[in-house]
Structure formats: C-alpha cells, structure tokens
Picture 1 (cartoon, rainbow, N blue to C red):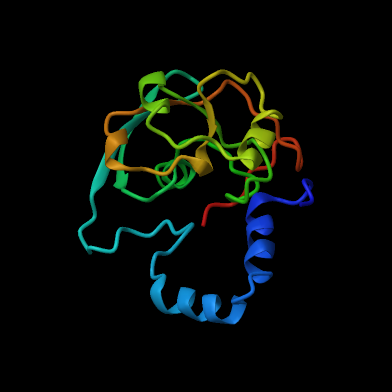
Picture 2 (spheres, helix red, strand yellow):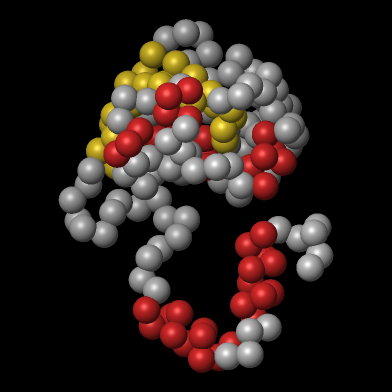
Amino acid sequence: MIKSISTPLRNLIKFQYNSNYSLSFNRLNATNTQRYFSTSSNKSGKDELVTFTFINKDGSKTVVSEPVGTNVLEVAHRNDVDLEGACECSVACSTCHVYVEPKFYNKLPEPTDEENDMLDLAFDLKENSRLGCQVILKKELEGMVVTLPSATRNMFVDGYKPPKH
C-alpha cells in the first residue's frame, strides 16, 4: 500500500478492489443512513445542547451552547469567537488550533494522522492541542473549556481570515 496517500483514500482503494465491489456498493447505499462529516443536528429531531467555554486570546470567556455533532470551529464562528479556520474544515491548515482542557481531552477520539500532520505546523503546540474543526461536540464534553492560543500560523496569507458563512 502506498503510504503517501491519505487513509480515507487508501480505504476507498481497498473497497474498490473488493471482489464483490458492485454488490458491496449497492448494499452500502441501501443500508448506510448515517451522515458522516455532517454538522447538522442529530437524527432524533431533539437537539441536545452542549454548553462549554472558550477562553479567548485576551483572557475573556465566552460561554456557548450548541447542538451535539457540531465542531468547535463552527461554534466559534457562530458566536463571534476569534478562531480562524482558513481551510474551512478541510484539515489543510492549523489556524483553528485550540487547547482542550486535559480532563476533556481524553474524552475525544485520537487525532487522525492528517490532524497530527497539521498540528505539527501549529504555533505553540502543547500536549492538549487539537484542531477545532476536528473536535466534534458530544454530551460527554459538557462543561469543557477550550483555550485559544496567543497566535496562529496561517500558511495561506498572513492575517487572512475567511468570511463567515
């Protein structure tokens, strides 16, 4: 297997070379109703909210409540928290780098190889560093504290901030 391509692409290649490709593909479409990478609310129709706190660069606090399944970068943009996100959640930069309170850091899934590669580029990396676009809210994160670093390293254009959606 080629190591330079991303894990999702490797999985797709393995899937396509499966001897039952067309049968597996049809079965997957018929039964898989879960929406991956979606930031919409949960399927039950009841929005469970997670309340947590941002500590901004100036030390001020912003308390927010957002639905389960939303990522921290989206929450920041909705609540006027100064978190960049230059690549718009494509895991191609480190401008949404945040520090997650250690007791909540361990409740998050392990960072992917792609996230770790981008974190290597982040300014002032710490043991509890994560990309905000990869921290997806779940009920276990109720009361979490997310701290913004004092600066970010924007590879696109220094000082560029994408427009809000």
